[in-house]
Length: 199
Image (cartoon, rainbow, N blue to C red; front, side, top):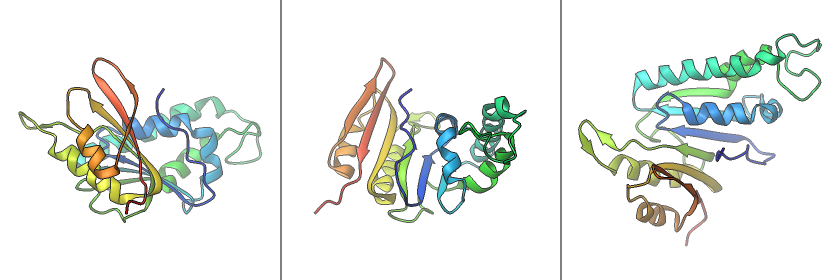
């Protein structure tokens, strides 16, 4: 319930699920914004990029995205529309699932955001890992935050779903100059940072 809406832009939109794991954040973002994504099905206009260093995670995300899209589009399956993409009520029908998978979604094995261009993303969603084998560590999260600050466009946003007990505040302040707490519970805190030109 705390994921953002599709960014309002006339330019190309690029969303990154950073350290995607099984793709949960990106899947939910697509599902919640499916009605608006139809305006951006041109692959040059809209992308959701799933990145993870693990090949198995990328394949899991690919499977979950495909399954979620098909499930979300199931109510439109018997549409009488003449269009392949619109049932006349502003919803995308099941014929668009292949377009969404093949043209809108990208799956990249990447060391955090190493392969991503600077100032190329409008929105980054991230739930950073904090275990490396048996050790609890924040250095991967710190790398993700630092790289996110470089990859976001000016005005772009990072949504960080963090384990409440981990000290990400100073990292976010250093990389972005500040942050706001969107919500918190006894396990997680969601931080939002906005990329601003810093002098």
